[in-house]
Length: 80
Image (tube, rainbow, N blue to C red):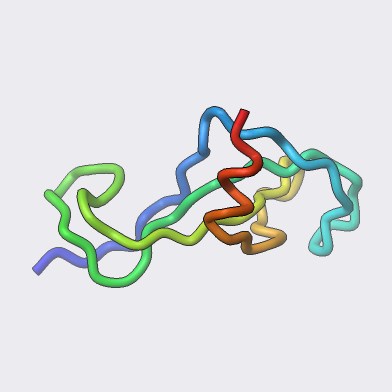
């Protein structure tokens, strides 16, 4: 069995959101990222699983910490 912690992946065609980061306190752009969680079907050495559930969140461009978890519908509304 292959278990890993999947790295967050930037959603390319999404708009950035300007807001104050609760972690660092800076007013900065936040980008939309997704990260796989739970059980996933994957091949070793892949960057993302083939079949999985995803968490969507905003990531601060200054401190690189996730600031707000968003729903799939919110993520889709931020697509360009």
